[in-house]
Length: 250
Image (cartoon, rainbow, N blue to C red):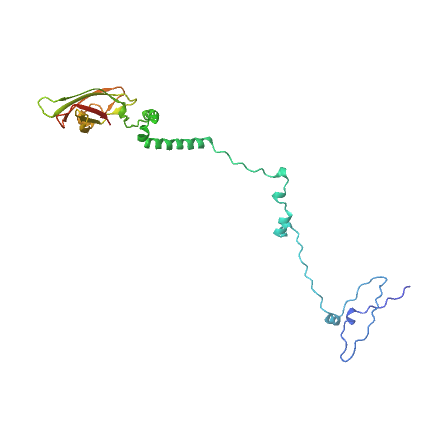
């Protein structure tokens, strides 16, 4: 038979305070491992009363889901678009070319602006022989009008005559025929008449408008290319010594 196991002293007996005025007895702790573990004896009420309070340990919850991971940690863990391989990277989007009708619209607006500028300045442009040809063609399509061509040097006087008017002293009767040799129709020109004496000195000069040498109803406002016309009017003789005269188209 084995030796009986000595009874174990409760832990509270080692933790009892020393009596007043004395020293705590020395306690020699000797714990023998029992050969066979048995049920521990229940502590008494006095032992429970004098036992120190046990420390309370609060367990911290351990995150179980990925939702509890801080945002910055998730951002670090997730790969960025820049780290993706080249064959997975999205190709840069290309801007779509403008439709062809956009360019046609821009070209049409530009042509309309140029046309408006030409029509607004057509009077000045039509005075140049280099521009008048295409301007005439343009206005024939658009039904616009151009001022008459003005080229005084293209008028030719085919005949002229000055005589004293019978029965009226000092009055001269002037007659002449003129022709338009220009490429385009011309308005009737102003006419300058100069009278000279026998020595070639000019003793009188005056400018006559179409209404003065044609009257109020000339019949036509322009002379067509190659067209001839006859004019006749009267002038007052400045002196009896008039022997010569000259005409000039203005």
